[in-house]
Length: 305
Image 1 (tube, helix red, strand yellow):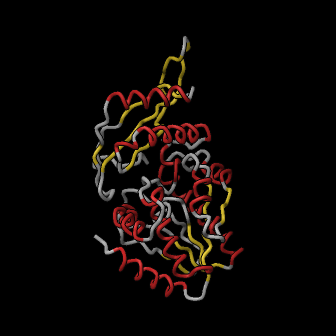
Image 2 (cartoon, helix red, strand yellow; image 1 turned 120 degrees about the horizontal axis):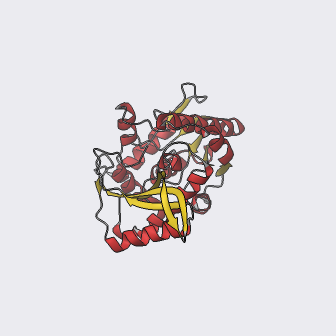
Image 3 (cartoon, rainbow, N blue to C red; image 1 turned 60 degrees about the vertical axis):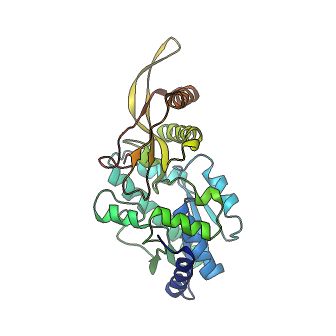
């Protein structure tokens, strides 16, 4: 386990050395990894840093508002409204790796635009060790690792938590006195809801996934999962009222893990599962059925794509 206090000082020194007198932007998503990277960089270089949150249209319910509130102390925080650009770029794409590549490139282009406006030479991001392992091992690329385009208009990319596992990042978050909503927050994939939608990403499917994920997070909070979410995995026939519907199938997933490298599906009581399905199908007329995923990692990955 990492010595959080020692790591913080070493990381700040490394960030200062890499960036020097230049300016940098930090890719801020609201998750614990990027939040820790942002806090470290902000302490290291202060007003040389511009935190950038890109609203891709693929974020959790209420994410943008939460970002504004949590990081309001960073006066240079920028919120980029890019929903249409991301969703338009993904139109017609089905393959998961192509989706990740498109999202990775679009992120970089958004950051490059802000970098030009702020004269930033460096990009700071919250890549952690499992991201690099999965990308290097070709399990799946991560939008901020294997999903990066070949040409990136930065002098360097700074990754202060690149050698840490998720539980170690949380230790550092606590040592930095980050709010509990950040330090203990469940992981959320960099490509967002795009990897919780099987096949083509559409605005309708993203909306279904967002609302369903919100229900799952609320209902399973007491179970303290490593990660819990919902994914739109296809269509099936159902009945609502007296009418036949051909609606979305939503899969609910909840897992226990230490570092995300392996995971076990959680045992959820029947009453809770029934409450989840009732809310998801009741609150969205286009959802025909809800299923629960009992697969461990391996053989499955935690996310669906």
